[in-house]
Image (cartoon, rainbow, N blue to C red; front, side, top):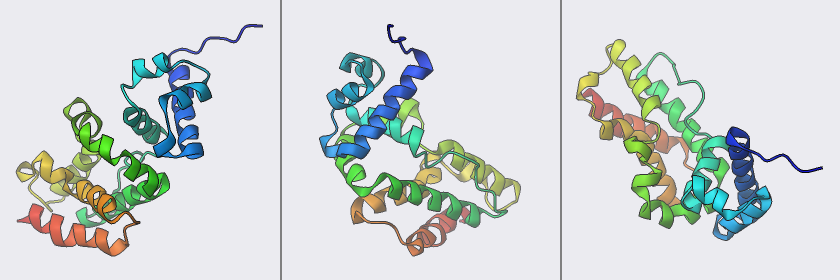
Length: 189
């Protein structure tokens, strides 16, 4: 009996699962496209047709298996609460991925910043922040027209930066500081 050939979404799911499993088994520094292909029982060419390099592949697997910005958009009834809920989710996701993986990807991540963080010209998490900011504007907390995309991305960018610099889990006090001392004064000015 011949094995059925995987295609489309089934193939992509299989490849991303193999990448996730390989990441867990060997860690990012030792992860190779060859190892993922072997685990997925396919060729490297199949991987390279979808992802140009291992950082893209691992980011896709992380988005599928440890999505930090998916799920319900926080709605606590106030901008501050929504932002803290979002940043806590992001921090938990980064902790689940692990500092070894995050730091192992750092050099490739910076080199390919435009492709990995801003795919198709959009900042990661832009939709979630847009919903949070629109709700805050509807409640009269902010003037949405004055908030640029760079300002909107500031909270999550600061969390990523802090994680990369400190190389350890962020205490909740840092998240409160980002929201209360940096972001809210900026958007309410």
